[in-house]
Image (cartoon, one colour):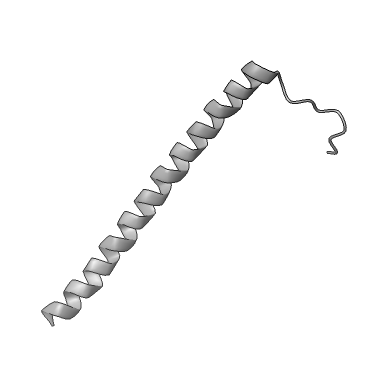
Amino acid sequence: MFSNELLFYGGIVVVILTLISAVIFFVLFYVNKIKLNAKFDKEYGEKSKVGKKR
């Protein structure tokens, strides 16, 4: 029984760690996207809205 419980709770721990890693990844990705867009705006100017459909 110990082996079954170890696999069960170990799987739960792996899922939780995976979800935490995914959240950290997406937060860092979003922050880097904001920084990169700010850098592009600084170097090339604001993005033109001409011809963009709403």
